Length: 327
Figure 1 (cartoon, one colour):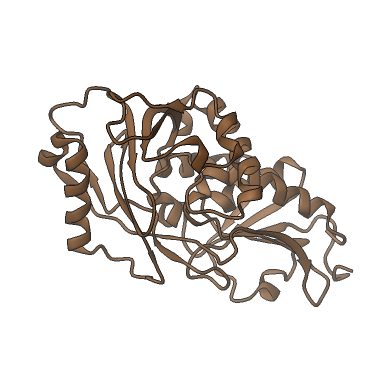
Figure 2: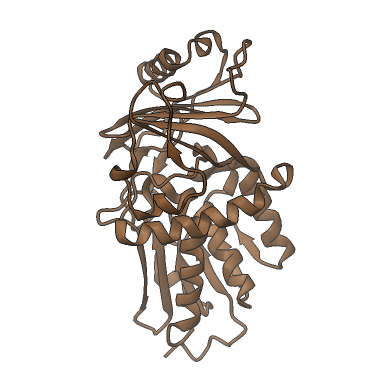
């Protein structure tokens, strides 16, 4: 039973201001709940803000659930890509080198237009060519915050030292915390090591994503954003440093320039580091009750693919809140 001091009009309290927290809050509001979002950092300073923003199931488990979440999210982004200036979402052509359908889950067969790349499109065989969503994350997160405020949700700049404290006065709690907060493990990386201006000589195709490799703790990618190219990247286990490493940043630019020589002369605008909210066993998306009976839904541990599965996970989390006894 929920505490008798909590009325039916009490809010569902979402912990976390990244793309997982904001999307979950919006789905809860759409389901008719009063919603508060608690976060130590505003969305502009969340890990999601420095994510590359490419839709692709990368470094995320469990495999048997990821595909459905990712495809549901893909459908949302494809709709929003019709208004990129408003939403920050675009559809961009690109290549995943050293990748083939037989290395991916069943979800890949449901992605419209995804096909084996030609030798001209990907000299690093095999490869997959597709037109996929790329999200300008700072712009997109600001838009999601605007939608929350317009819907009457409260964004509260505070932390939750414990789930019990977060539950005080709440109808239910949804735990969407990221790295460094209470529960998740973190994996360093996620964000590019460098952000470069567009080269003076434009690439052959203006909007192009190229991802080379992806195993271990390194991959090479460049992703076009309105402000320039995002270059990456790393995925270093058990490394919580948030300050850029100069040697790593130099290696990222060098590796990307080996794929596209015109990157060599690009001016580096900034170096950024993000912490992927990884978790042993993958995403935790479950419901339970605290000792006082308050329902808690966990929605965290999305690793390197929070942007990719955000809306599929948000909708499932909102359903759990509605269905769990006592909410």
